[in-house]
Length: 109
Length: 120
Picture 1 (cartoon, helix red, strand yellow):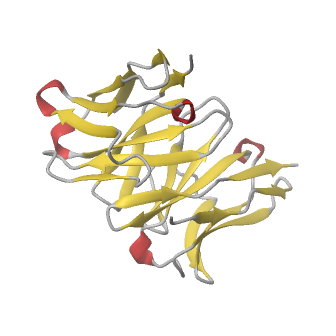
Picture 2 (tube, helix red, strand yellow):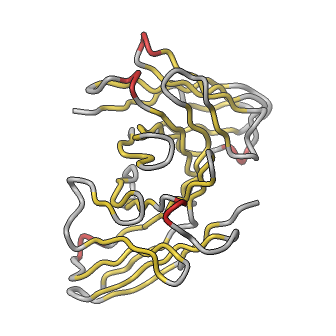
């Protein structure tokens, strides 16, 4: 059973910077896992933010960036806004099937 | 505008079956991989299954293989999820999502979801 692990919760101050990470139980996350990141606010469907490690969609705010960091996929928010308070999920590709991480609840306080 | 509208959810008894539908519009449905993702109440997202444009490739999460079947009808611009032998733990909001390819851009667009409740 493949497990993808994220920080359960993080808190950041408005205007600050925070990095969320995504680890795989199979080992280091590489670009071959095509890391994706999604944002979900209460009562809403998820929204795609980052695909293939670091690529942004046309609607993704510039303050969001994706990378690989120390064997994990990472999502960095720079200049956090109050509206960034949400749950964030990573998704990794395992040769056909995919697995979501457990999600990180980001609080902006 | 890309639109995905799920339907078919509702209350079903344990052991029962349900077929979910996802109506797609605003894009050429037959050109895209499609996925189902679910979310149990208060829990995280769970990727369930996806399939390619002509239905010749299908992938499932191991825990659901054999009980759930993904399918599509390109003539009707629709994606389906046949769910059999339902259990209480299948209670969730079920989302369909459009993928850009098998791996690169899963879940580029999402529907609003349909709630399935498995209870006696």
